[in-house]
Image (cartoon, rainbow over all chains, first blue to last red; front, side, top):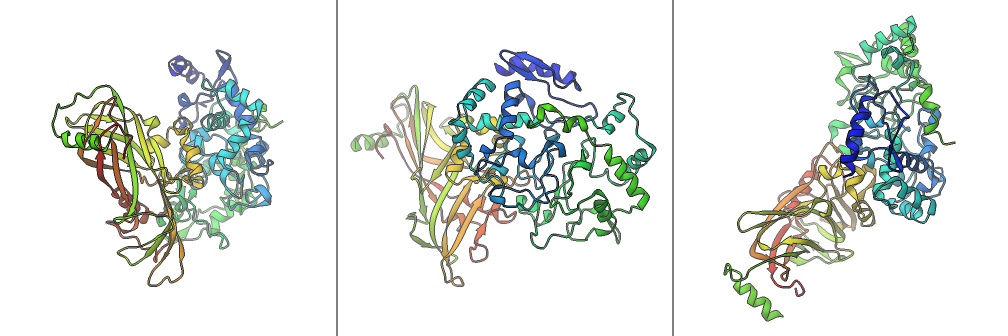
Length: 348
Length: 256
């Protein structure tokens, strides 16, 4: 019944692609318009299974910023995913969790997650709804159990009301908890960078000559992996980083169990990349210059090195100083100030 | 009561002797064993690879039950109610299927684990299974998925003199490897279901098969197996082949 009623509205939403923030009334709750930018590939997340609503989104936001989701009550999702850095943990090589414990991977951005099929650096889940289980239960991140989080929320009268307002089949339970968090994340679409406005011919925005040269180099030398306007093909690749001997993170192979996946990590999106230092799955590089220097000089051969980074005896990507300069200028056009200041996603 | 059960069993081959009507229940008992011996946690068992196992945990997920009757008609149990975690530790070893149409069922099919279709239903599809999985050590939290099988204990072998922990956690590997398997068992005896008749299908799960089945898995070689592209699928096959029908009790489901 619910879907029959909502489906025409969803179809209508698809037609008003860039029109975010408009509310469509559905009873007392309101269906939110999900942003589908015209320059993006189709959304991977099935919105009809969990259509974002005003109260569902607000509940998801409250949960995202609530330390109750962690064992000590202080580490919220937003602790590591800070909006002004495109929801990454700026300046921290590794995620910092409860009791000052440290993880082994750098916090990835959660912009545009609804457009991806696999989540976490190693693809530990292929459904966005189920992703929050990973950080919540990780001993060095939030160190909780799902059951205990639910017990805390069930004991909270405000949450009881908010869960009931957000979902037709109310109740503080795992299904609604995960749906609310997913609704918050699905709405986090970053699509209004200078680059976006340029490719969509909006507001008369143009790129400088330097930025255009960078775009051209990017398309030639980077866009095989950083594809589409999501700037990632979502695949897992070994980009030739010498493994950190103290960690020896096998990446995708930790999930698949396949030695052919050793040292492969998900190709990250480059949206807002100027804001999301440090870089790589382990946050080893402090600047984009260092990243480009690595691709020029630092790529290490191994049985699983991505073939695109190996041409005969030459490893990596050939880049001269001018090319690096213009590439960094181009990458700067991917910064979306509207996204990082959007009050809908802000903690305060 | 016993005489009544015997009487019914003796008549079960007489077709049309009883008109079966309405809906009823089917109880399925998962009786864990080790190669013909009762499985007792804390006891030790030696397998054909000369490894002696002392088991502390045997939990597995069974799912997607289907019953086929004498005419080949298949009753599929509703998917959203179709996932059960059996646990030797907690003594949760019986699955009860409700609202099964009356009939004479001759075979049983079920899955070991959680299929991708269920997982990809996201938050909506998991319901209480997540909670239950977490409380029974069946949630694979760093993969955000389910352990289909959790088999743990200690072992010794000719080269491992001191009791050493073993842990066998088997499940699907994200999107890269699907270890969900199904098994179909002929019941031998018809299981009679009606509004007054609740059969108990008594299965034996030979847990020895997990490591010592058609695929030989040596704990001496590797005692902790959680994500292995080579070994996990072999364990999944072994586990899916560990079930046999010991007998079927027809009757009111109260006696066993």
